[in-house]
Amino acid sequence: MDRQQEFVLRTLEERDIRFVRLWFTDVLGTLKSVSVAPAELESAFEEGMGIDGSAIEGFARVYESDMVAMPDPTTFQVFPFEGGVSGESARMFCDILLPDGSAAWADPRHVLRRMLAKAAEKGFTFYTHPEVEFFLVQDGPLDGSVPIPVDSGGYFDHTTHAVARDFRRQAVLALERIGISVEFSHHEVAPGQQEIDLRYADALTTADNIMTFRHVVKEVALSQGVRATFMPKPYTDQPGSGMHTHLSLMEGERNAFYDADDPQKLSKTARSFIAGLLVHAREYTAVTNQYVNSYKRLFPLQLPNVVTESPAFVSWGHLNRSALVRVPAFGKPSSARVEVRSIDSATNPYLAFAVLLGAGLKGIEEGYELPPGAEDDVWSLSPAERKAAGYDALPENLSEAIDVMSKSELIAEVLGEHVFDFFLRNKTAEWEQYRREVTPYERQRYLGAL
Image (tube, rainbow, N blue to C red):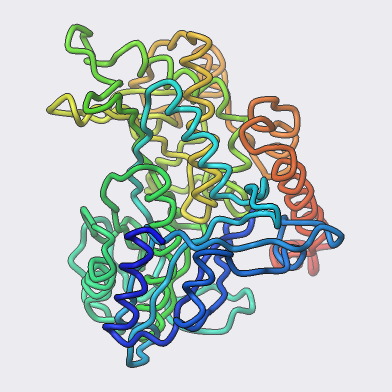
């Protein structure tokens, strides 16, 4: 037994923790868990916990359903709260294995681990920093009616909620108590919309933190009588929730994206990485924006006096918030990074980070050339002007995104055959169900007029 496992067992005994939750996600990024008694954890470290993979979205066919959840002791965290219940519980993320001890190809954590290992072979460590947006709404029925935001605030407003007072402060304190560092938090553009930014970490740690973040934020909201939602676009006439994510590659202690001799301080590695993100953007969009609703955020209804910063067109630029990939200003070499703005906060972070890294590494491997940057508001250009500038549109709906992804050799390689095939089947079924659904919009528009 290693020292980290011993630390976990000792902590459970010293703090009299009665419940240990073993966490993992399915292919879509839905959090799953199984609880074990502390007395069973030592054997779980040695042998894992048996689970029925056929009951988990995308994990296994019925005839190959036996799988093993192997707890990762480096992810151990004590939860001093949970839904207002007294006492402490703890959680660990798991790697999903086959009965012979090999990694399960359908485990999203394993998909990301594979890509991180590929980057490590080239001498790179991949770091990410997400800015997570979400809505805080009054608790109510989930019957499709329009939710009521908890406030009427706007960007950076100092709001006082009629309910959920000091919500962000409570959420940040809860995250800090379990070891997740927060960099910023503030009110976003739309009523009820919040943003909390997590600190830089390696991509696997960040993906684990995002899954924990969603759970904690929803728990804090419920404890205050409201609801947090990571739905990309809850309101027709308000901006949606994204997860703008900053990416960087480190070579040991050196930032591989920085070059002091370049006029823009960007290395050739950074330029090829950005070019990879652009060349393959349409291919990975189904992963970074995986729901029907995601495309309502990317291609919103254009309304007067509503600013659109959703990055719907394949372009890059400095300080350009309409670009798909933005290069933020950085004051020191270690801060050189790129920001991908298309991702929404409902994505599966393991798969999203894997495909972004895969696209960037492909650009480096093939020596992709970076086109000129866009410094204009890409949305304000006419379709003809965007076409002349070479700014392709991202897929405009989930159906188009699925079709583009299905033809991508890169995404198939990054995800692996099992995840790639299941993801496409699941999303095709979602689109078909949506396509056949008669909506309130149709009844409102046609029932009386036709």
